[in-house]
Image (cartoon, rainbow over the protein chains, first blue to last red):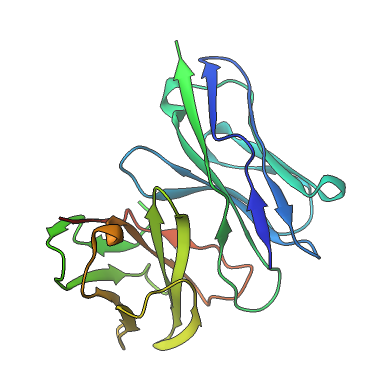
Length: 114
Length: 114
């Protein structure tokens, strides 16, 4: 079965600093990969997704993620964070065939300090 | 706004009671998913319906049941509620449910069992 690991439970970053959130997956083939964000008391919003093609994908709110097959990783990045980026971030995978559900990582909580 | 609508947004009920959570998928989406988010279990897949038929089951308790109606809205029924059922329940939808379709989430229904 596929699994997703987000090794950082909590990250604190200064406003304006760069950000990288880590995500590793375990699966025999290349899955479809997603990043979702959950603001306090809110639902899950899709930031970006990777299905195939260019391994660097752009998302909303200035986020990007890079798929690295050799490292089984799909790390999320942002060059300069804003206070409004404080939220919980979830990496998710789905197998690249069939009718499959999303498997989520445990999430990384991002705190922004002034 | 993802286009997925969930009601009620908040619900407080007593142990042993039964509640129904309702979900309207995005216009045109045929698949509906239910997820449970709790502090100890994280985001867990419960069940997937496609065009009225159950497609996949995850970690759904026998006390829980769901259905998708001809108009494609879905209901999640939770019965004999226990304190541990307190969680945020998400509904999500996608066009077909095949891998490669983006899954969009609603804002969730907060259930508190007292």
